[in-house]
Length: 541
Image 1 (cartoon, rainbow, N blue to C red):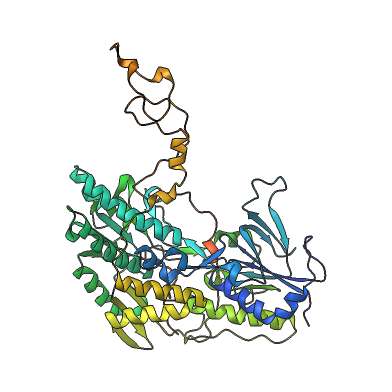
Image 2 (spheres, rainbow, N blue to C red):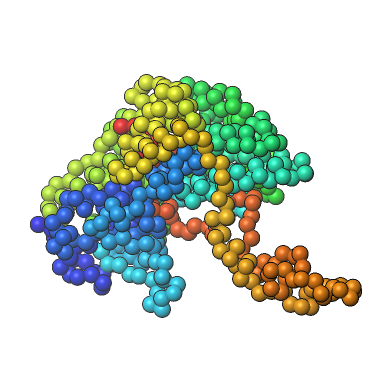
């Protein structure tokens, strides 16, 4: 028997229980998927409705972002379409701008909000599941907002790949040594999983790509990893962290520990050790923070801005509200020391989603709730093709065995058989054929070429007349209104491609799809520049 929680929203039927899930990432998608299975009869009869509000219509499997950036996996296979997986749920593409749990209403800004005269959408609900994930935490570093590149979304991963290859094109064609050196210098800030895996895969890809340039050698590429603490990859242990440093340095990667980025204004990375590195590529992977939507709610939060939760994954002191994942401070009941919280990683997020869904169903049916308890098993990380590190159940692996375990584990964890088969096929083909080294940076401004062709021709007064009597007897170019031999001027509104950084408009709101991004055991309130990116499934069972 499913009972409603006295809804107050004006847009829902009084005899229907609506579950509102904010976020379509690990927790959001898996919670909706489990509810869809456990409440199948109720959802078909109309007694229960599950609504998922997410900025993007897909869930991003973030452990595959480094391989997508390196071209080993197609971007389409890194994401899982929510409408296909959640075929019995209602998926709303938009962002929750405010949430009043006392009234059980949420204000949602959709893609059509600006065009509609009615304004944003207001959704009423009975049960709330908060899983918006996290967003990049930036520091007030001069020039970071102008020149920094993130690595949390599939768009950023593919944009970074295009950007790296474009910089190699610039270095190959320029005659200015300063421009060449800046184009071939790549600085990554943050020595956690995000920075190390992205750096390892992209360095591997760029080193391979350099063989197709007549004037670029692998040793001309300068890769710098900046970490504020005295170690990298703390989740795999101190010994494996030292091995990772040796492995990266053997590949001509400059690893700088206990070093901070102080400025990147004018495309010059200024480090705390006094170094000044002219660079056109600065990748920021040095922290995350809870999604901004949490600040627009009336729910209790901790000092870090996360929702305070109970071991049953309910919001502390609030009825009919649930939370898990990066945005939730969930007590770790398996920890030896009291007061410890679960690490914001996918290993916990996927399991929390299952327990949350079971408890939500139990609450609707008047049954007791159970606590979430899962002991951390270990972590694996890739350092490029055939290289990796792992620390699993106390056992330490490195090199090819760790890399193979990394791929095997994530292949088993990526959602849907469809994605598993496609990723496996791409890995197989990648072993038989050469890498793709094409940059598709023009995808960032797909209308630029058409806008140029459709621009109005220059006025006659803009064309300088030739004093020769035959000047006006020459055959005109094929483009009407264009001076002979001249290229048409770009329209005033046509976007210009910036080869210094990936293009495209900035993303707003929380993490796309609500996917989390903080790494295992990292303190998201740490402002020292240590990487706090979400494990996203890197840790093993």
